[in-house]
Length: 252
Picture 1 (cartoon, rainbow, N blue to C red):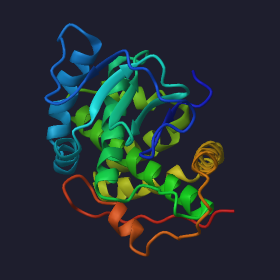
Picture 2 (spheres, one colour; picture 1 turned 135 degrees about the vertical axis):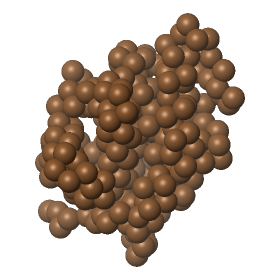
Picture 3 (cartoon, rainbow, N blue to C red; picture 1 turned 180 degrees about the vertical axis):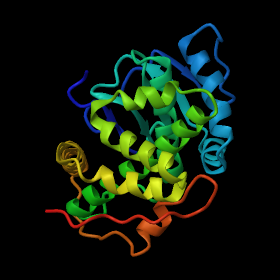
């Protein structure tokens, strides 16, 4: 297990330089069916097509999708500057599919203009980072659960086996098994993301480090904007367009 098995967020990779991709496919995503990337696309694209907002983001942004052995400490990330979704080639196929869904949610967040940006104060930037990660992980659980219920338990099992997210997968499953209410299970998963102190710490350090590095590289003066008042209302929308309730807790 990596030290930080991150599903990195929509501002790009936080903990490693731009990766040199091993195998990439640009739209229309033709890839040799005998390759790992071809297998991922043949399985993953039909899954994404079942969720309107993810499919719309894929069609609008048209990111290049890559498998790479140089994703640093992240299992995957979306990099807007190059419009690439990068996924660790060393992971098993089920986990790659789950990460593809996660990163496509970040592509959607980018498309909707709700990713963190450098005009925010650093504390607000980290706050936005937490929120977009909690949201993307919630949507990943929703899709993986639907696959499980449809007879493909692989992606759900792969997520369940990640120590970093075992609390979220367990709570989501218990909620769905109790009453089958997707909204309450999603709201629970989103809130639970914040409860793991080491998870918050890792994302805080990585996001703030990247934020400060960019300010240093561009010689930009710090700015102190805050998140817009409707940030969470705009963020927490299920792929079918239905909103679910979310907010950030009071944190130290």
